[in-house]
Length: 601
Image 1 (cartoon, rainbow, N blue to C red):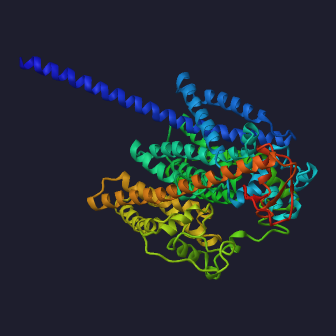
Image 2: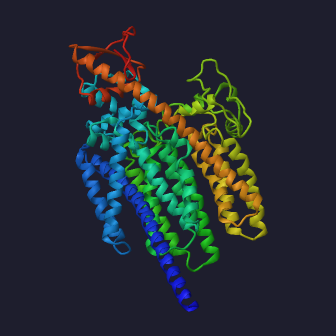
Image 3: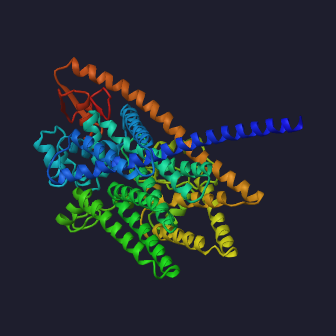
């Protein structure tokens, strides 16, 4: 009888184990599908950039062909890349998920109006002009609009022409392809949503490769992905969030490349790094500087370390890395950057014109410093901003010229939280809880250094020192340290410190710090996300109502007179075009009574 009971118990135990294993396998398959989908999406949007710019080099304007050719090339590439280690079914499913995310995000964001100044000035001007046939490699947007009879004479606004003609245009070129496909300029700003999906999947993969559990990998990747910089820009044409997430991925890949992976995984990391570098470099000029500095110092670290450990075997990876960076720079600057870096170098002697070179424009960063901070060093500006209330007290926002308001760390207020509806918030831009996170990070870094020395973990100590020192040098030497979107790399440091805690068997006190830090990060992001969602919804409902009133008015009148809210808001033309309204003309009359989308009529 006892034997029979044991047999039944063993059978039940095996059945239960099989059930658990089956559930685990299903969960792992879903996770792998989502991670693969995020990689597929990154490859796809990068192909759109490369194909579009190659066609522009050969003077072939944007059409829907750009999208479909990029899609076909991506699908073929993904099958070739994955056919050895994935089934056809899994490859196909991951591609379908990528496309599903792409189209749902594009449709959703197309229903939300960008009411920001930058979005409706040079961003939409670039997107609309490229979509309508402007070739940024060979001509000026001002001349193109004048030749095409644009009623908004942008020659009156030379600053916008300079930004559009010379700035990096990765997000605008991508957006122009999406605009051509959808017929809605608001759909073009989908890049922020796509990079959230990409960041969540790829950062999860990278932390998993760093030996974190799936749950801990998800926590760390979610904190980095839903960072304050992208959360305040998620529904508009601002692009700092794209640079931030791509930079996080770049730095983490450069850190883990010191470890040995199988050939497929190593090549996959190179593909992801290639795509992220193209986006970082062609999103903003800052991207070239930041990616260049971090890749440079970590490249030196990796190969010096290889030389010390294996003198005979360090040449092959050194050559591979060097060739990779040469090829990547060629694609980033000569191909995708042809309409900015290459053109600027040929015409103005500086790839970073108009920030540098003959007749350059003074940096906006210096113009926007609050008056009370004007004489501070970059380092002091940084600390004042970190420990101040989140707000904009810069010259373009405040005539009173108040200075930043210092606050007690770990505290906030309704007034401060509402400031995070500003997409380019100047002071305290890392969020209302970040001053507290920063203090915990400093303590954590001291703890890591002491523990690394005690346990003789010199690899960890070296890589920690390199990343910290690089951050310190960038913050101390580059203007703009007070402005979060110009120092996005800083947000990675506290997350890496948290990652150190999560990887160790800590005592109870450190466990409490670990949980408290996670809660601080979540609170920081949720407060910003909450106020953003609420503000976006109210704004959008108001704008939809005003848009419908304007459409009805234009149908009942032969000619509609329009006065722009600001002379530089000429990107609004493309919204009016999308509404299929053409019976309008510009006027300087400021007495018009009806409000619409960034203009009166």
